Amino acid sequence: MVNPPRSAYLHIPFCHKRCFYCDFSIIPLGDSAGAPGSPGINSINAYLDLLHREILIAPKGPPLSTIYFGGGTPSLLKKHELGDLLDNLKKKFGFQEGAEISMEIDPATFLENDLDEYLQIGINRLSLGGQAFDDSTLALIGRKHNRSQLIEACGWVNNFFKRGMLISWSLDLIKNLPGLNSYMWARELEQAVQTEAPHLSIYDLTIEPETVFGRMFKKGKLNLPIESEAKEIDSHTNKYLKSHGFSRYEISSYSLPGHASRHNRMYWSGSGWWGFGMGATSAPWGERFARPRTISGYKKWVEDQESQFLEKTLFVEGSSPMPLDELLMIGLRRREGIHFEELAKRSGWTHKKCKKNLELLEKNFWLTFLKEGYLLKENGRFFLSDPKGMLVSNQILIQMFMWWDSID
Ligand code: SF4
Image (cartoon, rainbow, N blue to C red):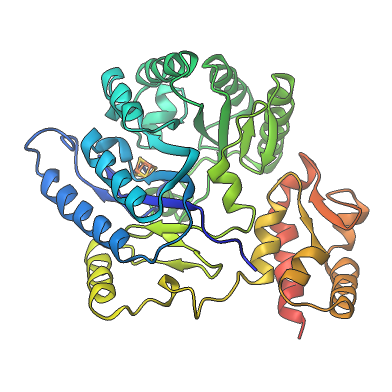
């Protein structure tokens, strides 16, 4: 069975404008977003009303140990708006002692004083969306901030961290951006380490069809690093960060000892979580459910919930545990990998069924990966080798899904 949810994700969908690679569920408000009296204020108020209502209609659950404000750009909200959401969540579930309360922040949306206010309401971990240091790269990907704003923001956050007001903080970067070569990437990494961030999230650029980059890619106008360059970038990332004390605890996450994100680890552990807000995914008792990605769809969904209680994921009964293929997929992203038999037994498989299907997986689908050291097996536990296996994680997962489709 999936563990009961002790984590909550709240989606804050507002952004100044849409970055060229992003297909998240967001509402672009324009450059004046967040300013007193700006046109976005009404949208923010109407959305927060829906979010509060969704929290109210959720069933009770155990006290939360991790809470995460993601987006969008949560730092477009004011202290009292974030504080009210935390109060509402606390009333509903309670918070465990020492709960990790994280928030994504965008360099172009806050000043040092704002940070102080976030920490006063209980936020204790920040994730700064830097994405790149190079000014021309930032312009090319459609970010609002520039290099000096990012460096200044890192300095503010790190000062709060050093003064003991944050348990940790993280910097996001994107690798394999258009025009990037391994030399430029090495410079990006150096600057990331110089910020003293104890946690780095390093995402691979993915090209989503309905984005500016998707359209440019289709027309052959996106100058992405070639495969050998991308491999060089990945391999350098691992070596460089390892030499600076970071360990890769999940495909996209590197941390100094003790700074792994508890909320992030929860997603890859197979535990359930609450999700609130437009486009948010929740899996309170295993089965995943994604809310509508538009504000009108989300509004209607919340109203339906209030009047008819239609959504089965809001009830304990009727929810099924996370399917085995999903458990295997999310587990394989973690450094510690998966114990196949343990997960299969949690899903109700007998020893005989485990043995038969595991043999099929190893012999017909994962044989090359195992033989060539992309996938390692120790005491029944499978895990990706680092960096070799992590680089081809998608191919390994595709084979796993093909195996899943082939079994009875
Ligand atoms: S700030 Fe983040 S969520 Fe908003 S558009 Fe850019 S990438 Fe997407």
